[in-house]
Amino acid sequence: MEGIERRFEENPVLKAIYGRRSIREYTQEVPPRELILEIIRAGIWAPSGLNNQPWRFAIVWNAEKREKLAELTRYGEIIRRAPVVIAVFLDRKVMYHQIKDHQSAGACIENMLLAAHALGLGGVWLGEILKNEARVREVLDLPEDLELAAVVALGYPHDHRRRAGRKPLQSFILREFP
Image (cartoon, rainbow, N blue to C red; front, side, top):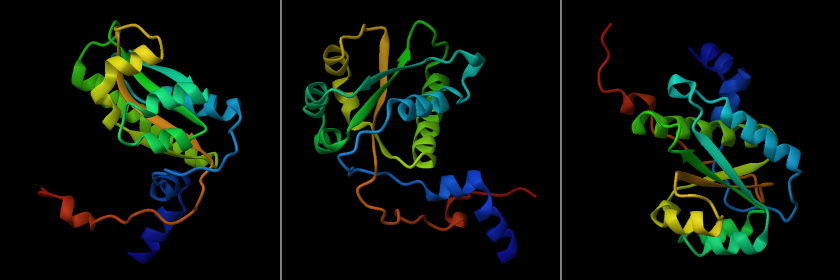
């Protein structure tokens, strides 16, 4: 079994999944725009029902705008410290099923976080700000037909500590039908 586990750990996709962690503190270095666009490109390759690709993005480099967003969440310090944040929205005009489209947004965001990790950046998925969705749209001057899915803070990691562990796999399996 150990050989199989080692082979899985050497797989680049699984290595990225197991190595990624939420990063909440960043250096002052601003990532190049090309890296941020590549992270978004990875996001849009997530699966979506009927391939409707409902996600839309607002990239916020501006410190004043980030400050206004930071005031809308109890996790504002993360937004203040991040050199760039991406607000991820769903376009209600192309959505066809709320649950499936929200699942697609989650897949998009996870792709973005994995891409950030693969490109040497760190990121964290911020969802508590959803309680102020209308105010986020107002700060970003966006229309009401966009539904906020999350804000993703990005930057170069300030530290490289290991991420939190996971409970044993068996604790998640309800039943198995051989």
